[in-house]
Image (cartoon, rainbow, N blue to C red; front, side, top):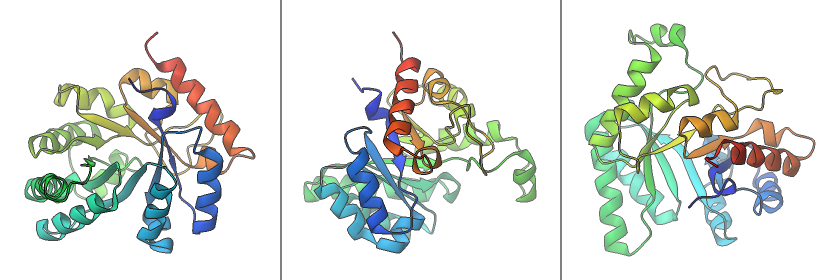
Length: 243
């Protein structure tokens, strides 16, 4: 049974390893996992992942692999070897790409005796609204697109998706398997600006809607007291859990 703390993933969206380690050291006993995305990974490389894992942290590697199937399968093998708990690919990369990624991770975990990470698919970025989708040639609305992409991810053997809090129930309807996890960005306390994300929700609201993990970055990183901000969000999550 996951606790409220386990469900909070802090996005280490910073530009130096030193800043990342400072945040990790202060938050490691407050939150369940840390997200390492494109900015920090580009700045510090895979060693930042290894060092956080060596200190007992858990990592969600948020690099959103999107390439030809062979390239994504190879990258997925390296993510598994790193020892991350979760990593993601773009569902829009297609069914062959997702299937190859899932198969490569399962085979590597079995062959090399490493823990199998959860492989999840990005449906639509939370910065995209209907107008933005039309600009890139997608005529379906966000809800229909998310449902189709989530269904494809499940069919390909992936473990879950990244989805906006407003599409959680859509994903649950499209993929009724309760083991299919939903990782939800776009979480904002009610008093905090939404920045460049469009489809946002409070932590309690997302948990009530059925999210398994919440990814929070700026509301914690930009706070005067990141530990207090993280504790506040954990309390919000607790309030959204079934009593």
